[in-house]
Image (cartoon, rainbow, N blue to C red):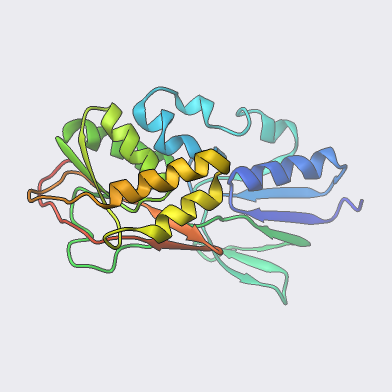
Length: 245
């Protein structure tokens, strides 16, 4: 393959890191550039709401490759770098600060992100979103300092955060849309199989019957449900003005 080609991967995610690895193992000998907005090298996100959030596993267990992998395989890893725009006609991307970078091929592997709640109080201290390693770090500190946690959303991420918060010693309340959130239960059932799906669906319907009685919560965590490429937030917000940062 021609060595003058440049393959740019936007999104230093698990998918992006594995794509860069595959290019090398399949014999691509051009330039490979892997660009990520976060300061960390590529890591896997599932443990952010589980073992890593609880402090059971260190950051080293999350990384896709060891630190030397990218240099050893001639992969230009650009962390802490944001791509502002893509110009397909010119085969160029523009980075934050205005720098332009040409490419021969481009892969977008940025993934999805929770949508901010469009409600008053959504920017108060004590309201957290979970997607990045740093957010999991801050959330762990917040949960340990809190007596009660409210989780908005009853999908997989919300369920895992709720379970982790209980294991960290906090009381947990979950807010879902509707008295019986059959849609959320059905979404979980679609992601599981057979008896496990039935159990999860029944559990979610039972949880949805509970009521939240008074008081404020700290911290408040938002989670999202992915459906057909979109993330939809479920529930509403109980703001808390206490400083738990």
